[in-house]
Length: 512
Ligand SMILES: Cc1cc2nc3c(=O)[nH]c(=O)nc-3n(C[C@H](O)[C@H](O)[C@H](O)COP(=O)(O)OP(=O)(O)OC[C@H]3O[C@@H](n4cnc5c(N)ncnc54)[C@H](O)[C@@H]3O)c2cc1C
Image (tube, rainbow, N blue to C red; front, top):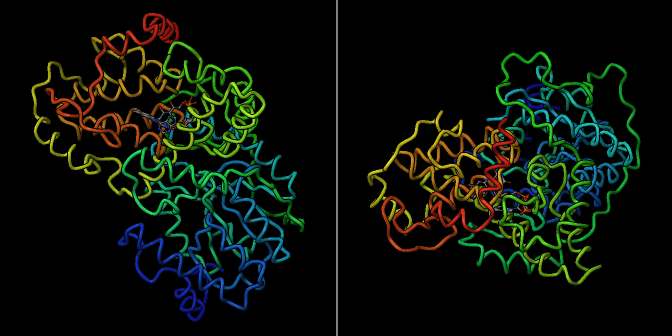
């Protein structure tokens, strides 16, 4: 059922079911249009059961390969990559709907690769902690969960081992994961769809790169009545008889065991525990006790006042829709929470989905090339301005600058794997002042952010760094050295806005 095992006739017909142009040479808009044509072909293909054809009308579905499900296929596979959860997951819901339409069971598959870009032991430990929850939640819905870890995680081999009739994946706008999906669409000969499961409003509905939060906000909020709806978590109607000899790894064991080509340099953080259960526990605490003061406390790094959902969102242990529904329900129970709810929605929906839009539509999301024209001009004028001090990467990495507040923030990242939002902005802006130019500053910030933050390697990080360093989604301010017209944050004024001495003290304790 995979291209390398098929005869030349089936390979030829399969070619017409996927993109005819190399996706690497296409813009996102061209790809979206070509995938829409594949969906239209699928919807009209009378060889396919109607119940299955109807599913491609769902705005979350992207048909990356059309065609007829393998007639001798034994199951529908959900290849779970981004949305690592067995509940409240549109991709799994669609896989179950496909399985039910075809009268086939559903198998959820997770491939534990050992070389995920920039991930290390800290990230893998968090991910690993989430696997048992997925297995349990899938089982409750009649879905089998199989994890294979490197070196035996080859996708095509798995799809062939279980004889997949079709494959459902989730979406991930980051460069490498998007390429994996495009390559898989070329390699498969069965239908392959991806489902936009980790945003509330399907990303393709925004249609193009959004200029600012002010532009994106009304478009996103207009779509909420349609998309902010409770999940149905449908059950698979047909049970899968797992072949006795099927290779599968233990989800409760250390998935990194024995990996020699793997980065173990960053330690896991005991204070964090990954998984859907842990995410739901923190969400309840947030809704029950912290939400009331969110609007006031969200800019106070010395206070545990934000939801801390970002690592769970990054690993897909919880979806944004689950969080938004819980926060909305809390505000409906207690109308005094409405202001906090609105403020939280602005972060979770507007800024988060703007970040996804940014990475999806902006190929240069990790370099100064993504700056707007006004910012490019001011950067060109000031990028070579004399810096008072230049730090080398190890001095920044190990919090050895003259600035106590910055060092404290860096310690929070190093030791706790999560830095408070207010200080992330200050942290990134100071790196512009302390490195020779903004291109180097971005490289340093991305390197540190992705290496240490549990929520790193995420659209939120790339958008946050571009906002802080390039003025992306911001406006021009007064001209000044080094920053030009990009917004400046001084240590003195930043430190006066909250109890910075207390925060520095807290981070010192963390470092001991
Ligand atoms: C330089 C810099 C680097 C950043 N790096 C990351 C990163 O690697 N990963 C990441 O997820 N976020 C990143 N952010 C965005 C933001 O700082 C974090 O999402 C937030 O601090 C996470 O904490 P929380 O879950 O308690 O947020 P809350 O205040 O509780 O907000 C709820 C959710 O809204 C979203 N959100 C909040 N603020 C933002 C924002 N400014 N942009 C986009 N989404 C937002 C997050 O998903 C967050 O979990 C970065 C911001 C900056 C300025």
